[in-house]
Length: 299
Image 1 (cartoon, rainbow, N blue to C red):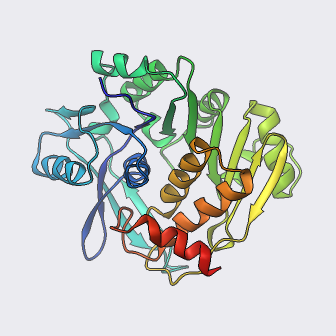
Image 2 (image 1 turned 90 degrees about the horizontal axis):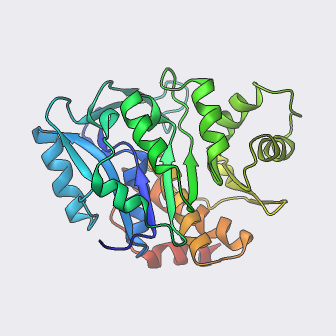
């Protein structure tokens, strides 16, 4: 079996916008950007035995993503999300996530068991959304074993999460990525100070998470690691849409961590990745690595 540096577990789906449908799902977006950065990555998911699923398989192959761990579910349809601009901010999207769908039923197959045994400095990226259903949740728990770095990309979209489930996932991760509103939700469960830095430090202590990354939208991002707090103001771009920009940011973080960048350089590169993707339409636009470095150089 091919050796993969990163495995991404969870949803692959169609983002259905008012004027078009785009391939998406946070784990697949992260996998796409890691592939663009030449990181060997495996995508673990499930699609329906339907035209939408076949189209996603073809697109993943075009992205040069392996489909070896994408299961075909003969019963449930391929995932869909209906995305609409927020009335409060047209650049922000509101999402209706269809349930149940194929990625709710990812099975722990012999191929996944073999993949899980690749533990030499490897990473598993997963989100809270993919754990909403018992079948995929059980498979995820089977993957959350062994000597790997577990990366939790929280996606708190009501009603697709429960506090008890999320607490369990927080206790199992080594790297946590979340946004300001998700930090506030978790902070509301505890009597934590109100400042972001104090909340992040409390979160790290409460759940024994060594590295926490907070995205701050147009204001960049913050990183807490090795007991120190770092911030980056982000890069100003003309925003096309925000779909997948956080996923590109996470891919940039993981790439930088794998390459052993300093925390400050990790934030800088990740923010540039997120900003660049926000300047394009969709979560998986076609771009060149040189555009990321050009954006960084321009600032």
